[in-house]
View 1: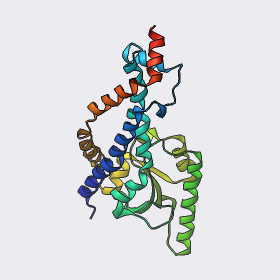
View 2: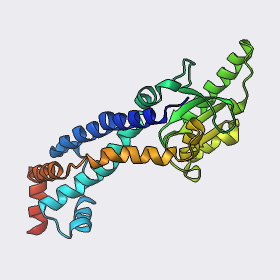
View 3: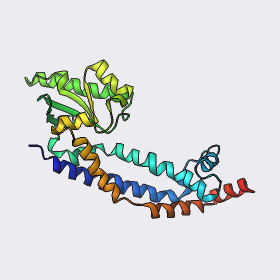
View 4: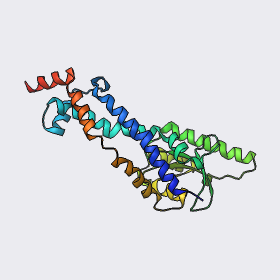
Length: 240
């Protein structure tokens, strides 16, 4: 029996400990101007686009906000997939090389050997060949051990997203190698047997978001960054 409530609670704890805390830690480092690779052609444009001026505080916001709301948190999420497997889906953990989890598909009743990926754009060209190689080895190993495995038993599971959002690399796994890529709601439905589990998972993690009010601290970091010599001089030059 799949304990869906346990998965939801583990997911919430994983997000809080592995994603939110790291996000805050990375954000605190951004008071240092050396943490940025500044494009001098764009920064003043972005400052005006965001705040309508080139004051130091506006330049600092234009530097920090894209990082804290985009690259920093997305990078953390993508690199924590192994912790997600071990902390959230430990009951499905696989001992098979090249496989993250094993489970009985609650839709078709077949045993699935699954490699987990975080999102619809998180693999590259070389990953496709690596995944296909792992799966081929598992099929061959199955033959050696008199275990009948077909292409339908080996899948890539994508934690979030929609099928139409899958990158061309994911599509190659299906088109060129005949392995199914199952994404978002469909993946969680097959894993748990609950069609609403994906939305429940999103809601559960959203509870962490309610606790993640970092507004005052972020404003302090922006103010600290705005005091850097580079930003002060740039603003003075532009407004003189």
